[in-house]
Structure formats: C-alpha cells, structure tokens
Length: 227
Image (tube, rainbow, N blue to C red; front, side, top):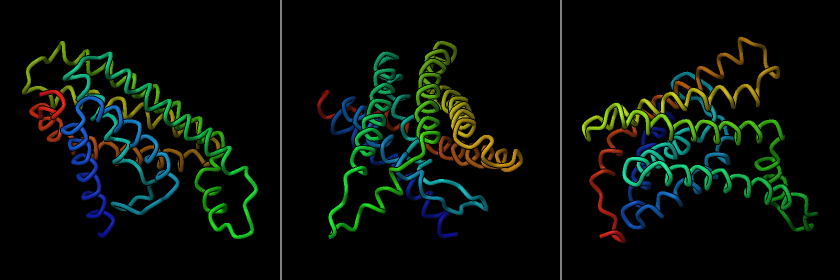
C-alpha cells in the first residue's frame, strides 16, 4: 500500500504547491505552474508504477493539476487567460522536447555519467512525444471551453464543483483517448490497449476529483501581488 498512500500525499502536495504559487505570484504563478507541471509530468511519465492493482505511468497528479490551474484562471480571470496558459504549457513542452533532443546528441566526455540516463528519459520515440503534445493541446482547450459553457449553465459559486469536475473529467477522457491511440494503438494487442486506456483514465479521474476542495480554496485566496 506504500504507493497508494505516497501517491495520495504527492497529489495533495501538488495542489498545495499550486495554491502557494497562486497566493504569492497571483495569475503569473498559475501560468508558471502550468509550464512547470507540464514539463515535469512528461518527464515523470517515463516511470511506471504499480498502484491500486494497476500498472500505470507516473505524472498523473502533476498533469491533473494543470487542469485545476486553468480552471482557476477561467473562474477568476476569464477564458482568454485560461487559453493563454494552455498555449504556454504547450510551448514549454515543445521547447523542452526540442532542447533535450539536441542535448542528448552531444558526444559525452569520457568522464560523463549522465548521457545514458538522459537518453533513456528524453530520447522519447516521436510517436509518444507527438501523442503527449496532441493530447495536451486538444484536451486543455476542450477543458477551457467546457468550463466556460458550464459557468453559463451553473453560475453560482457553490456550483464550482460542477464546472471543475465536469470540464476536467470530460477533457481528461479525451486526453487519455488521444494519447493512448497515438502512442500505443497497434503496438499492443487490442485488449491490452483497452486496459491501458481504462487504467490511465481511472487514475486521472480519481486525482481530478481530489482537486475540487483546492479549487474552492483558490476562489477565496487573494494573491499578495493583487491586493
């Protein structure tokens, strides 16, 4: 049960760090969080773990926190800022992928000990890299639009949980579908691909549900630089 408890603590830590960034830096902190967590999540995804009886990739809680960040931006500052954060995250991921592909092509010195590890982590095959970027972009933009639509249908502050969970859980479903289709479909037998798709979405669904209280906390926060 270590991974389950550690994973829960890690998810809560991610959300607390997000709120801390928001409290100190305001909307700029949310923009920074989207960039940071998008990059880190795509590094962590190279590690697989066993959790709740499933084999899954790491990075789900950090990745889910980007949806919370864009939902907070959408809620407090409007759709344009949320969309700006999505494009910032996408651009950060693209820069990281391009820069690290160049970095691992350098011939290492005889004393180097990092090349093999860096090549393993950042030498992602194009199919996985493209799948990650495509899934991020389409799902995040969908999340922003669904949240804005639900805000019109459920405008009360007390209904934030509907806007947050409705937009995130639908967009996470699309995210998982796009990524697993591009990255894994045809590589594994169909029944194995279905298992990967379902297990990945279940974990994202659980983490997305955990972020709701933190969304309500964010609504009450008055950032230091905006007072």
